[in-house]
Image 1 (cartoon, each protein chain N blue to C red):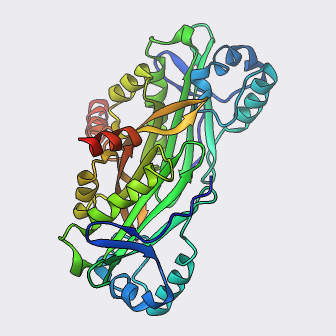
Image 2: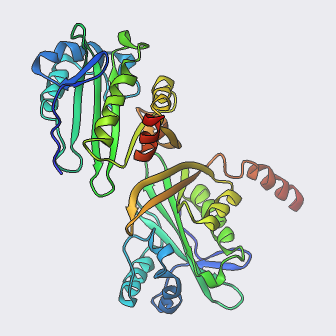
Image 3: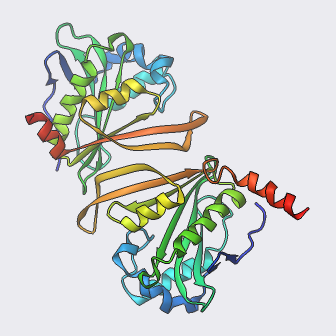
Length: 189
Length: 198
């Protein structure tokens, strides 16, 4: 199954669209920050690294095979401000599994943008991409992140303690997941 | 790492490396679907079991990450092989290990796995200096779940329908224990024993 959705995906206040070369400054504004990078695998990115990342992302707009990812810029519908990014990775074709991810600029936190944008991606995952289960992970100390997953109706499936090292320290990690049936019943509730 | 001394004795068992002549005993349980779930490669036929034993025979120590130590559980009284336990050293930097086990259903329910796994956990933490040990099991395997709880392992993960196994949605549990959580009183007991000898 190949999936190349029509963009942008629109929500009440947001537009989710592929990245373009003009997004470098907008992405650097949040990916360059220490507080944003704290729980990400990457360290804070330089402007050049942001430009490279965006170059990759301009092609990450569809699913053709396992491991493919859709990475979208999130901008406000009203004034086109870039507020963050969301991603959906096709983790298993056979078992129809996906992984959800998001990064938002701290200046735009607390307005429900992340909830709105990730909800749109769950809709894409369970809808057009026909996934059976979508999961997401976060550092156990990253409370805003797991609170968001709970708002989305995801269940905490795993709490790993010291199962690896992360940035030189013992890692503690949460996994959250939602099954298609659970998502459907939430939507109809 | 100091040299490993085998076999290891428990109350009722001897844990020793595998031998090629263990084929008949291993075949009794290795081809069962419940065992197949966690073996590295499927063993549907006798030839497969023989190949699996050849691998298990070579897994006699841990020298580098990625290696596995596999020991046969042999009953002291009558030298009957009742199952096996293995320890995989999965990561050196973070000191991670994974335990696996299988028992012949004809010999389950007698506490053999509790003895064997306790000995393997001791070995992992004391001898191999592992930091965290984990065990995976099927969400429907009530015996394994009870066993993990009895050993004092924490439930860390409960995956639902995260993969397909033999055409069915899979449910998988992860249990784990950290070195400092395992027998936190062990040092006190050691001191006590020494005082008594003196």
